Structures are given as C-alpha cells and as structure tokens.
Image 1 (tube, rainbow, N blue to C red):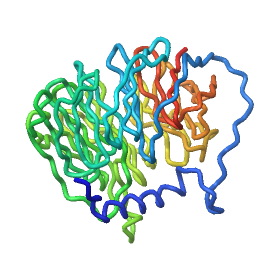
Image 2 (spheres, rainbow, N blue to C red):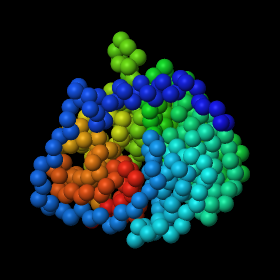
Image 3 (cartoon, rainbow, N blue to C red):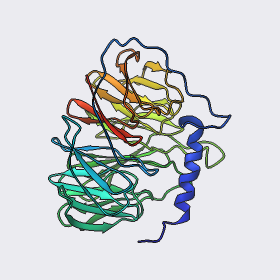
Length: 378
C-alpha cells in the first residue's frame, strides 16, 4: 500500500482542477475574472462568531468538521484528530492516527473513522485506540459516513464500499465504470439514516443505493453530457445530493440543477446552472452556489428562479448552508456572508479566517479551512 495510485487518477484530478480554475478558483491568469470587491455593508442581522481555533493543515485536501451531538472532531493531513468543546472552542482531547489523512473523520457511538492517503479506512475509539483497519480500492477524498452499524466510504475511483461498524469486515462494493475525465469531488455521497445512500457520479448521474446490500434502487440523469471534447462533456455530480420531504435534488458541474420524486425517480424539474460546490434546501427553496460564485435560489415546487446574488462572483464561494431562516456562504478570503432566504440580500458579514462548506452543529454552524475552525451563530 506504500505505492502511489495509478497515474491516471492524478491526471484526471489535474485536468479537472484546470477545467474548474476558470470559473470557481482564484487565479493569477489574465483569463480569470478578478474577484468581485465587497460592497460596504451596514449589518441588519448580527452574524456572531462564537469562537475560533487552529486546526491541522489540509495539505491540498478538503477537511470538514464532524459533530456527534456533544463534541466537535476535526482532522488535518498530519493525522492529528482534535476534539473540541462546541460551547467554548477549547480543545478537550485528541489523538494522532500516525498516518497522513486525506479527508475529515466520521464519528458515531464512540468510534472515529478516518481515511489515509494510502487508501485505508481506520477505526479508533475517541481516546485514539485502534480498533481495525481495512484497505480501500483507492484513496478517499471525503469523510466516511456511518449509521452505527455500517460504515460507507466513497473513493476517488468512484467506488463505494461498506464495512461492518464493529469488525471492519467488508459487506459490499458498488462499482461503476468511470469516464476518462472527471471533476475532483471531495463530497458527493450522503447517507440517509439506515436505509439508503445518495450518490452523485461523473456523467451527470444520481444513484440511490440500498444500505443493506449496495444495490442501485434507482438512478436518474441530473444532466446529460454535451459537446465535442471530453472537457466539454464533463457534467459530473461533484457535490452531495440532498433529500427532504420526498424530494431528491442534485446539481452537476457544466450541467443542471434537477429534482426528482424520491420514490419513483420521476423528474420534477431542472434548471440550467453549473455547480461543483453544492446545494442546501429549506421548506420553500433550494439554494446553490454556482461555479462563478453567484448564489441562487429556486422554488422547490417548480424550479422558478426566486433570487440571484451576484455580489460574491469569483470569490471562491463555498456551498450554502442554513442558519435559522438565513443562508450562509463563505468565501476564499475567510469571510462569512449571511443572506436573506427570501431576497438573497446580504444582511450580515463576519471575518472568520476560515473558508469551507459550513456544517451544522446544533443551532450553529462550523466552518473549517485555511488552517482554522470557527463557529457561527445568531
């Protein structure tokens, strides 16, 4: 397992990163638009920073914090897992996995699950005692997820593997042929309870897997590849699909935002928008960060455009999250923006020194990135 993974995966990741750089990343290239300057803001709602803390360097990967209802767990490429008090931000524990990590950790029922750069799934107690280790089919770029009985991991080769929570025994493996080029996805899988796994795939495909056996229950096309070249035809679902009230929605890079009936896979509506970042939803709307940095809202019922916020274009804006009845996004300069869910107007702003997809932790949000973790609240 000390050998590097095949060159093909590295080339895919590199080309995908180059393909994304023109629309979603800061760049010194003359062809890349300059980040939109922020307008002066008189806050109407106080976006509070509860606390900040330092975390391990990401080493080129993406790490998100995990919250088990009582404590916050963070990790870095150096293999160190930190345990943080969610009320104060103070580090109250932690341990060294003794390996380089490539994604954040999954936590459930006193177990911490981590993935190594070498393509391993590792199980620890919260005190850092090793419980078991399993070999993956490739390196994982997103955190393991578990319901307390089964642990599922999505790897960079597109496979999803399930393991027994207690023993680490492999339970099933879902494989699907991958296209020659694909977007480097750091989170396109979502475990729902103890029933199903939502899986976004290259080629614009959304698949629903049964957690018990890994079989595809149904799949649908979020977007259809178009164009003459492989780069043109990259329409990958590179962010996590979402489910709520019988509706499953996903968005594709160079593709569309599409929603389906969760039981029948019947398409409900689609709208043209390119995103490799992700989506969030509430009772009324679906919110998406497009690859140009605009934040948009669509009506859940019919896909009607509700609002569009262009004030953060080309600022490396992350996926949206909900904070109460508001929408929160962060940008590449470590600034969090609080938006009205009704109009998209910016109502509050806070400098947090961290940039990443906000993660819910009780009534608050956690943001990890740029070597920092911060708590946001109202």
